[in-house]
Amino acid sequence: MQTHLTVHPMPRTKIDLPHIEYLSILDEDAKLDKALEPKIAPETLKTMYKYMLLARRTDERMLLMQRQGRMGTFPQSSGHEAISMGSAIHLGKTDWHVPAYRELAGLLFRGWSIETTLLYWNGFEEGAMPPEGVNDLPVCVPIASQLLHAAGLGMAMKLRNDNSVVMTYFGDGASSEGDTHEAMNFASVYQAPVVFVCLNNQYAISVPISKQMRNETIAQRAIAYGMPGIRVDGNDVLAVYVATEEAVARAKRGEGPTLIEGLTYRFTPHTTADDPKRYRSDDECALWTKREPLARFSKYLIAKGVYTEKQLQELEAELDATIKSSIVRVEEMAQSEELANPLSMFDYLYNDIPPYLNEQREELKNHLEQVEKAKNNSGVSPQKANAH
Image 1: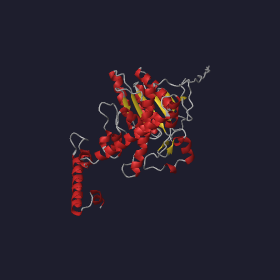
Image 2 (image 1 turned 120 degrees about the vertical axis):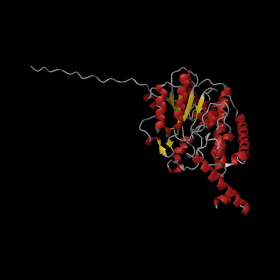
Image 3 (image 1 turned 180 degrees about the horizontal axis):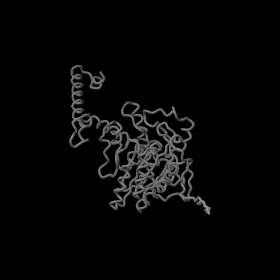
Image 4 (image 1 turned 180 degrees about the vertical axis):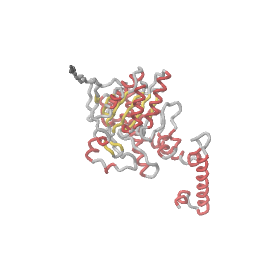
């Protein structure tokens, strides 16, 4: 006799996953949510604003120089100051700062000089050297590769029981790179003290975020890696401050990495070689310009009595003078024998220079000698002789 077994299907059960929060404290009209307002000392607020403003004015001056032929192509940082400074303010001397290339405010705060920045974007690799005693990696142009470096630093800290933290930055375009996912996965598996800060400015050069991913937020990717994630108003320096403060504290308690997504916008082209009018509308740019970080933060500081209008004007003048004197110095440095000699680019890459680089060095040396000879024979400048 055949026995019929009754099969009872297993019920489907829901997996309880974390939710993603959005944080905004000081909105685009400088309206404050007092219940969420962090307690920040007036001097710290002044420091934050000073470096945000210095970064903005330096960035604007660099654009003018580039248009005048006095600088090479570079990516601007205007609009990203709140994310950079609101997070970097939490880093101490033993912590590591691993930037991409729009973190000018944080770099200046960490001790990088304006001269160094100008040298770097003028093609002098001396500008990539971090200040003495500062735990920073150089600006990283290859997309997302710095996140792997940050994860490695964090894993080393974990192994050494080093109670420090690594803070690293990347854009929404970089979030689509494999390096990003590998770095976040390793950091989470090893519970490394890394804070991943995404500057979501809506475009990977000309590709909008809607064509990069189907998920609603970048922050929710944190769930897949088993780490906390949060989306913040990236133009609200107070929201960035709070989210990063929590992430740093968590990392230093040994609770692993965090992903912070800051919503912001490029008020400028992707680089000075880009034409954003080909892929962005004027209406969209105007909407985001109203949300820019410096205006709302300055209103907040005046309302709190941290600054007066007159003091802000004096600060503007002071920083403007600093930038002008830095430009004079760096243009003098660029003419120095050490920096003006192109052959120096070969001198520090390797302890033992490979044969193929020696060949290239000799080829360039011969070319420069020919240019110099042509100049001496004709009285033509080296640049014009080179062009011929």
